[in-house]
Length: 143
Image 1 (cartoon, rainbow, N blue to C red):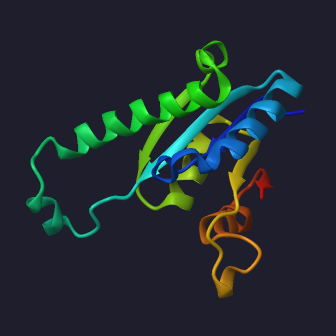
Image 2: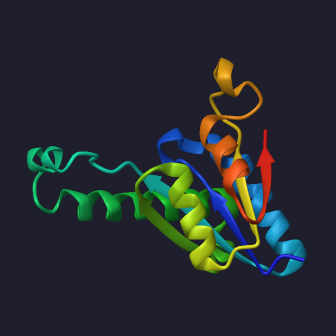
């Protein structure tokens, strides 16, 4: 029985993660669990790269990502269900931030989509494969 479900989505994919979000909501609702939805923004990498951006770029990007995440959840799940969701925007490497968010939220289930597999990751996308491999909690992969 889950108390907290974390759903990882990529807002840059538009509505491609709608089935992932719907499945996560369904699993959370079955157990009366809290639903958290996370999206991850890439970081700048090398510190010198940040010099090419305006000082408030990260804050604006984070706010825009949050707004898009809220809009996606409301569009897919409805306003009433969206009101109970915790929306999280993280910055860094996708699989690492998903795992960190799951740990800090106390999630006991992660729901993620299997996207864009290439030859080396034939069955799962690279982020889904890494989350499955490194997670301490159960991971539900939506195809």
